[in-house]
Amino acid sequence: MKFFIDTANLAQIKEAHDLGVLDGVTTNPSLMAKEGIKGIEKIHQHYKDICALTEGDVSAEVIATDFEGMVKEGEELAKLHSQIVVKVPMIKDGIKAIKYFTNKGIRTNCTLVFSAGQALLAAKAGATYVSPFIGRLDDVSTDGMDLIEDIRIIYDNYGYETQILAASIRHTIHIIQCAKIGADVATCPLSAILALLNHPLTDKGLAQFLADAKK
Ligand code: G3P
Image 1: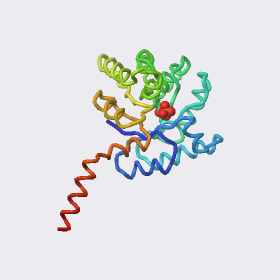
Image 2 (image 1 turned 60 degrees about the vertical axis):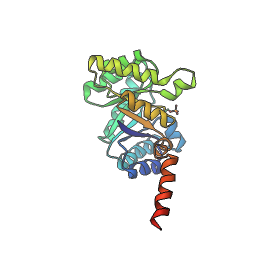
Image 3 (image 1 turned 45 degrees about the horizontal axis):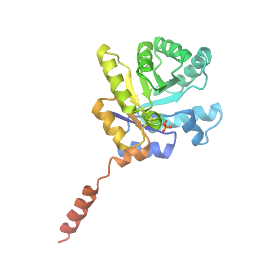
């Protein structure tokens, strides 16, 4: 399973990259705003700065919600760097835009996916990635992991090459469950990636080894 980091924070991207386990980055307008990145030139430069920190794919989201606007924005984003994947919302014009980008050889990430039917449409349009939001489903008392399972079954039934990019991951159990089901990618906050390191028996065992080494 590939690990992407879900942030626009350059220091966190560097920390995950330096750990040696980073396969890519996902961003969204909320994450860009959180870093205080405003204005088209600064936003484009920030995407380039992110691409310089990883060898993997970097999802950059369009703001437009109409077909023509998404195509214009997406083509500009794709030109910024070969690692850019154009992130498009799961709406009617978004599906049309994904099909357009697919025909042009521009890679896409269909975001805000909350149902298996939406994931099926994204795959049929040729999306490179589909982003089901696990945590936000959990937030409304719906098991987000059931959606990952359903999409895995559907994609495997028909050999769709669209990669399942599990998003809105909040903690380590989400990551483990995604790996068990066979999600292709998990995009996680740095805290969830680092939390995978932790086990009290590791700490206890290491303390014992170090104490014994002094004897
Ligand atoms: O990748 C989507 C992600 O940023 C949403 O996460 O925690 O805002 O639901 P969250």
